[in-house]
Length: 105
Image (cartoon, rainbow, N blue to C red):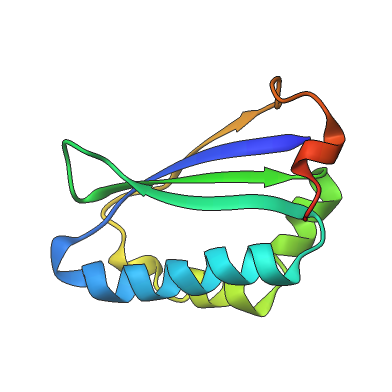
């Protein structure tokens, strides 16, 4: 399993556009991608302009497929809402360890 934590900082005046686009991507990812096990969007408690994406994919091929989806293009289409580069950290899932946990229900 491949997990990612992605940190983004947005321009406050662009919040509405950002949230609309990332909602399309997050919901589309979980709904339409068999290899996407999770896509959560979180807002930093101390800085309302910082968001985190928690994404879990079956493997690199699933992540590559994600990046080719139309809903991903919606997200990439609002890159101008960001205040600086994204910061991505790749991780391996540890617990729960069972692959069946991450399977779509």
